[in-house]
Image (cartoon, rainbow, N blue to C red; front, top):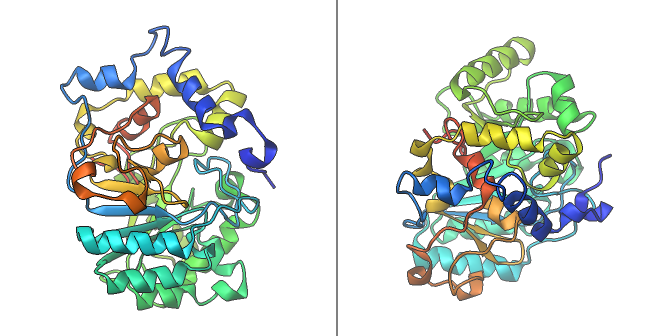
Length: 350
């Protein structure tokens, strides 16, 4: 099993070192323009936050998988976990702001011992849309998780599931041996209670991340291929496929450097830059909350420890007027969200 960068004591476990790499080299020399300069060319600098609609909450880095591309550097050896006290502070913010969507991520968010309590309490304070970013295999990892599909259904949770490919080889290469078979079993269980079926309100979407140093293909055509293959081979159905560009941070950055693909990948991102994707990037209407309650513009900035440009840097100090209209913190990894059709946690943005 792959160990996390944190466990390996890799220099890339340090977010400052990652930012140094992203700021120097081909960007410092001027071979490639820095992201701030590129968006300035189209009068989109600085990026500004809009009305808060989505709280994306990372409830812990603990995970039952150790995926090769993981930007969170999650795994079984990560013990960081959100407390109920921090969850209570988030619930207070939901009541105060009227944020309509709670997007729960990890690690495997279901591994947080207060995960179910948090969902149930959030539904009481006004959350209309729940998103859980599930790796699927957690449903089969332990008997205590076997009833997760029924729990998801009870709260009408939108399940967004990682699925690198419709073939066993490519999926297991990215996510570990046996992941594909367990994922198929979990999808079958979700389908059996109505998730992903045509016309069903129980939303089941899949997420595709490229397995190498290349950008994802067209999301619509990939969705057709996924649906055709999973239906023909396993009778599995789902609603949408989200094609997400791998950002050059954490374990994917480690892979790019080790495989000597870093510069080529950054050239590919910059060459694919699409100014029309900038206006719809997720950081403008989303606030990311770390396991220990700190605030970030997005999940990627959270992993790079790039805090919000605001006096309110922790959920306990949340004030709407301090956060709305703030300038978004950026670096060169942001090219990943603005390449081609653009990429967010909801897939393409254009």
